[in-house]
Image 1: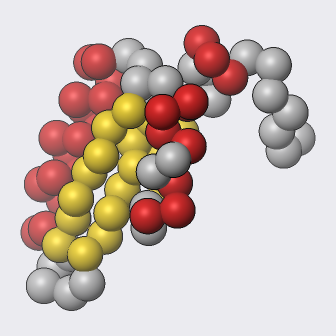
Image 2: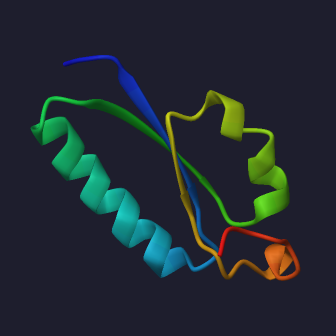
Length: 72
């Protein structure tokens, strides 16, 4: 296994979060990647964890991010 891949999953729907987590937990180790998945259900608490993440998977429809300006 290679370096640890830290995935920050920001998703407010528990079923969607579990779907993504379960698939990544199977597929990435099978491809030779060590993986750690951290799940947050809101943007505000997740922001502190972004610097430590290798990858961020972000739900763009979070309740606490409705009026943020993003890329168009």
